[in-house]
Length: 279
Length: 260
Image 1: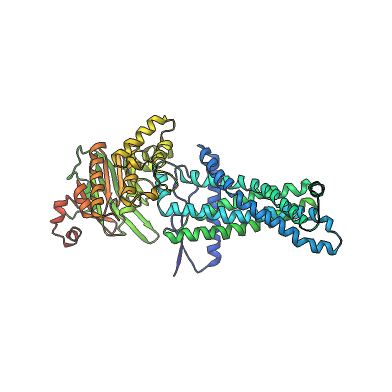
Image 2 (image 1 turned 30 degrees about the vertical axis):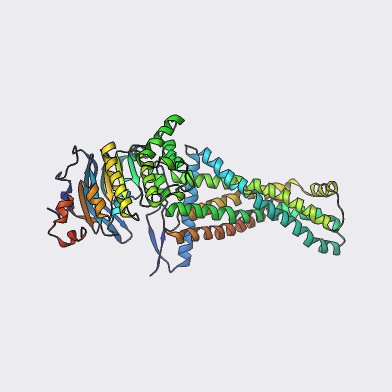
């Protein structure tokens, strides 16, 4: 019978949460396998919060990761957002024109981008770039025993590698989404002006007259959860990857798949919660 | 005497330079699921002694040294390092104890994203928090000089050859001046000349820093050059111990086969 091996969290100094070592589980039950994966990820997440609160704090590494995760993602996020705003505007214009509502184009695009498309698409791009990057990097470090070497040298690898990356992802994605929203609206402005002439003053006036805090706040808050999900899943997949080069590819791939799926799930929950408050 | 029971390994027949035990293992057991890797293994390493462990793949050699630094948790048994029972130590005490143990990984385990200098500075920054830059530079230069890599200080690990990577791994370990050195197949994947260089470095480290070492290897020349005592492992236990000369003349054909 095939077995899957669930890697326990590595025994770190000060680690309070540990799993049974190398828990072997029959692979005949998808249901069981799913719950073991969820349990393992939950323990990993709980460990993150324990390590997060415990000194010493890795500020230098957090700054470095914030730079790599946030600043280095700006070009990709910017280009994607500009195209998103442009395409959304061009695609929406004929439909609105049919109803004689072409003048509502800036307002409609603004609400679409700010409330949903900006956060969701940026999070998906983020999952693809950052989630896979974290997964592959940590898996590679695992395969080449760098994580073990770190532990042997008296460094808590979970705190140094995982906590800093998850925290950086959580803090950087909201900033990237704000940037993405702004660039997306610029793309929309270009799209509006491809057919006809609309001044910047008129465009932005329409946008800001339409937008309310109720549009901005929930959309902004959920991006923290998106960032956290991408960081924690990328780290989890990388930290507990299988040994061997195959494990690196699998970790990167599954980090993107699960992080993207988690972005949609969180989005669905966030929309439900937001609608409850708005009603 | 070549083949001995595991419990009789700490009889002191092959004492190191001063005979004080630095690593004492008693009845260690470890399994992964139904796979029993260590079965009632006992071993003592004395101060200043180089102990080489030989054995076929999968006999628990790497698990044994990884258990010493806490990378693997033991199921049963007593492990005393530098007079401290590891099972009774707090996290902080374990951290302090780890500072006294160096581990050279089979792959070198160099941090790919860092330069040679940063690889060496990393353990220093983690262990010695307020070290002045001049002192750090001096320690890095000394560690690199010891392994003949002074010119590679600004290079990335990916630019180094296999032998240089091993030497850098050794330098990174030595920078904290450990009392105990653990070598996991230090010459694997290297050509005979570089292997000999690494073996000589292991001897130099022993003599210069008075370290006690456990060396896991499949390289018989390395074993001959570095060992004060050789342990042969089989199925998670010690099948034989002795000097190189004793084991090569063992009446047991299986033991002799390692040296042929």
